[in-house]
Length: 167
Image 1 (cartoon, rainbow, N blue to C red):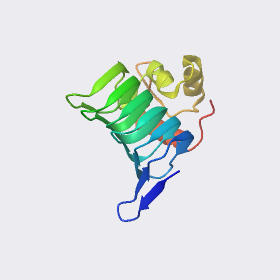
Image 2: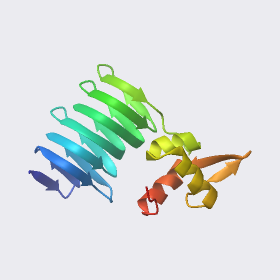
Image 3: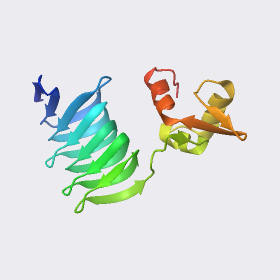
Image 4: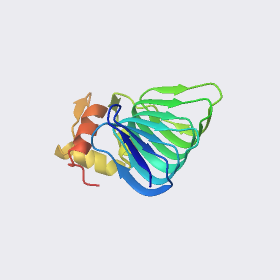
């Protein structure tokens, strides 16, 4: 495993082949140039270099892809696909930038500031019945508008980060 840490830029370069779960609770600038398989949960900026091959579920704030990625990608701020990117799977971006030349094969569901129960169930990968139970019991941050539940995505993300969710 090759980790290079540049303290001035606070960039973490991963050039090795890795498998497993990589989680960052604090914002980082992470650049992956090698192979990765598993789960990536990052805060800050994630750059997938042009030589990278990733098979993973990725969650992050600002994600820039220049290599090959297969899996589910959730970008809470922005997802950018560079000209040499090849992405296959389902993406959930708050904002999306696909540069000419990039290849995207799959489904895209834009993240909105507010989610309805069905969108939240898909976002959290839980049953709709669980969402309704949590909303009715006050376990999840929610508000009612015209008898319909709505959920602010940023409040949900904070709630998840606090560890209060129990799937």
